[in-house]
Amino acid sequence: MPRTFQIRTFGCQMNVHDTERLAGQLEDAGYVPADGAQADVVVFNTCAVRENADNKLYGNLGRLRSDKKANPDMQIAVGGCLAQKDRGEIVRRAPWVDVVFGTHNIGSLPTLLERARHNREAEVEILESLETFPSTLPARRDSAYSGWVSISVGCNNTCTFCIVPSLRGKERDRRPGEVLAEVEALVAEGVVEVTLLGQNVNSYGVEFGDKYAFGKLLRACGEIEGLERVRFTSPHPAAFTDDVIDAMAETPNVCPQLHMPLQAGSDRVLKAMRRSYRSKRFLSILDKVRAAIPHAAITTDIIVGFPGETEEDFQETLDVVRQARFSSAFTFQYSKREGTPAAEMDGQVPKDVVQERYERLVALQDEVAWEENTKLVGQRVELLVARGEGRKDTETRRMSGRARDGRLVHFTPVGEAIDGEVRPGDFVETEISYAAPHHLVADGTVLAHRRTRAGDNSEAGQRPRTAGVASGGVSLGFPTIGAPRTEQDAVAAGGCSTC
Image (cartoon, rainbow, N blue to C red; front, side, top):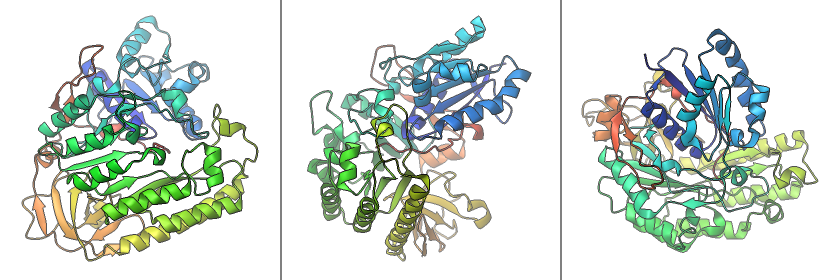
């Protein structure tokens, strides 16, 4: 019988993208997803952004120790940013781990598993530079209707709080034709929404010398027939240019949504973070976006308690939040990471002070988001029906979907407009009846329902599966529909966003 696998993912969208590639490789190597039973191979795709990342990993590894003892043929692999950082330390602390691989050689996993099984000893392989661009590897896609498409890997910034550049390396860009080939291939299999992914998507093109490449890429996506929604994450405020705003406003399938990391509203703190913009510049970008796209929803990342942050600095962050009117925010308490300049800075803020500021920030952002969401009550919205977005959908008999601006809407799937059954991947139109800080509710009847090929594939439990390409290439094989994902492969969201 074929060996089974399970992947547990922690962290940002980059890790979700890498997990799709890891799953694709394992399937190509003859493994099959575990279906409820204990897997023969358990892979941890780790994040190193937050301080509790180590505890989360070693806690999970500890819980598997007895399983490994009971079944010596079971294999445990650890990859991702924490593996790149800790290297052989993982095997020292958890000697029952079989494979450790880094961010630059995710394509090595099947070989390392086979080598560890043959040699009956742990295999640790950490490369210092990218071996194979992740998007050239086979992938088992997470969704029948929405796909991640990486346009770059790595980061050229030197933010003092961030460990990512040292673990993922300098930015490397894919050629536009390769990106568009992947998008077209996904659309050909029924995918209706793509998210362009990069550590700093708007610096795309730096490697091949075209500073307008990202705006051009957005416009080119607008020419792909059948592609109904285009999103991207995350841009950097320092590199954000007017041509990107124009491309967003003038390309119909680019969604009116922008995730723009603020990190702090204090110019003094931004300077200490080595964020090469200031609050005035940040707010001016939002003003331009809203002038061109009045209904745009803007989200952000904010860090509380950066070393040296004073109450005055924190108040400046609250002031920017009041002015920016974010529809939502990923808020983080500063996490000291060994190997970053911020970890050695004076003025580390006491935990109780950070917690109190964090609670004030969350309360303010919830208030702002609620006010902004309330403006949408009574409006008609188009939703791309999603799978598993609403935790209470079963008990409320609702379904959930994302509006074009990215807001989460729970709706009641009733009404004469419904054509058969509403499935994830279909589109519905409905009217907002209630607003909360983190979601909207539409409890009236569905006003329109459009069945899609993505919905057909969701109903059949099928998802696109991207084929690999020959070693050394950077083009992309075309997808085929593959087997459904099991619940054990579900992403366990970690605690970081691209910055």
